Image (spheres, rainbow, N blue to C red):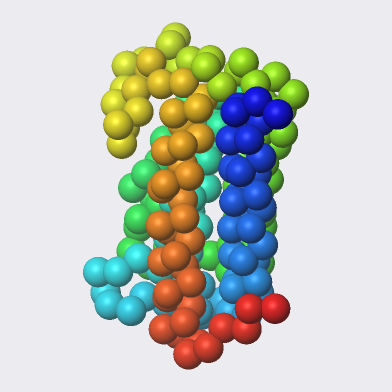
Length: 167
């Protein structure tokens, strides 16, 4: 087994686990819990789900599924963002499914890890990634970025519910 396969398998396990545990948590929440914020300046679970979705859209749907390059980051962090529990579950599922699908496509062609899909897009620099970034760099960036927000979702859920059942 070569190192690229090992990395892809690791990422697949991680994203599948994050998808599962995010679903487990969201299923225990109400619509009210999804939009609740611990302080007026804090993000809600709805904001965090919207942000995860936005990041996946920006880095994977655009590059792999020819989605138009449109960013609406201000909406992701909009105070009072409304989203039902069902919408949060669906958006989370779609986001993780997209990453998993990309990883499974790359697993069949590991050389794609070195592709630079944003070379012909308008110049940008976002969170240390730019037009020169490879798929591997994007995957590793999200490997660091998304679990931080997943942890925030879990923490907010625990603040609101007191206890989460992890079964």
